[in-house]
Amino acid sequence: SHTAAFQGVTVLAGLMVSIGASSIVAQGAAGLILMYTRSLRKGEYVKVGDSEGTVIELGMFETRLRTGMGEEVLMPNAWVLGNTTRNYSRAHPGDGFMVQTSVTFGYDTPWRQVHALLEQAALATPGVTPEPRPFVVQTALSDFYVEYRLTAYAEAQEPRARAEVRTGLHQQIVDVFGAHGVSLTAPHFMHVATRAGWTAPPAGTGKE
Image (cartoon, rainbow, N blue to C red):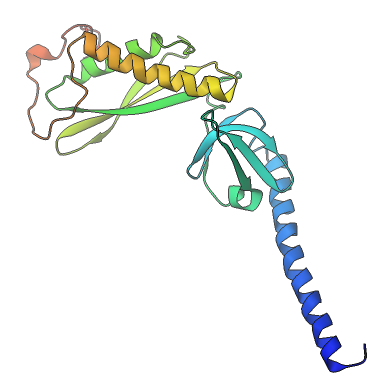
């Protein structure tokens, strides 16, 4: 124990333990911050980085998400704290969550008709509630098409049920647009709809 070699190994071992402990302390501190700031809660539907799912466990060192697609995502708390978190369960009081999807249509498709059809598809989806009412916003005007984002509120509780709600919403969008003869493809050419087609059913005359 009095040799220089032994003392050098001891210092190296102590340094390794210190570095490893600092990482553990950082993870624990991040976990405490997430818990006490209530950034996440068990049962909420969130998106952290590229991972989206239901929070099934918020521990001291890690957070677990279940995607509803047979996947369980484990994320270190320090990583969660350092990334942007989108929480879809706090936009409206209750245990539900907001579900969103985006579609694109050419300029030849009247935007009033797109809004009406998307809202109709959302209300026809099992699990989506009529209140708060689904709404549509136009998020981009690209060279050849308009991008629309549909937001609706669902009451699904389990991860698998949440995935089924989103699937059902996409199915209803395809069915509703198909029933009204509106193509879901966005052609790469520009043609602006005439005023005569602005209020074609089911858009009506309510939106000016």
